[in-house]
Length: 200
Ligand code: GRF
Image (cartoon, rainbow, N blue to C red):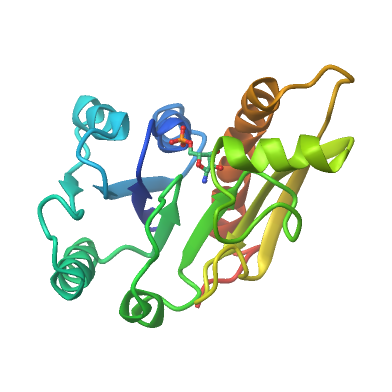
């Protein structure tokens, strides 16, 4: 059975990317990360990729200021990886329509709330958890979903919940949710590998 080829897109620390690497190394995931792409030069995820020997690229406004050229380079880089699946793991740029069209139903994202709540433009990182707490919700969680032309609007794959404590802060909630994200992402990839979730 050929291993699922994955390209991961990041913007930050890359702990979800690391969760995939750890699952592969622990023989807990029949997959291969064929590339990492960051839109931020300083993303720590790039260091994680180097340590693990994963080919990585920086494709951002700093080295490709022209949006059309940046989109073209991103698509060309993805084509060169020829992944079975693209995983957005804290990728904060909007994917060009050409990429979404080329990899229809082959791009997934992980979002740190129970979509359709606390998601969409502006809902990323700590802002998500601030919104959850301000709303008075007592339950939050994480969602994996297919990526379509919208922001956090694609078909939901899996969700896992966490219960807020009475003294929860955005920071403590972000850590609580991040730890279940790692498990949820690996569970989602396993389901895709086992064809329990069908790709395009
Ligand atoms: C995670 O909270 C993820 O849900 C969101 O961005 C964050 C990425 O964290 N999309 P990391 O870079 O994987 O540590």
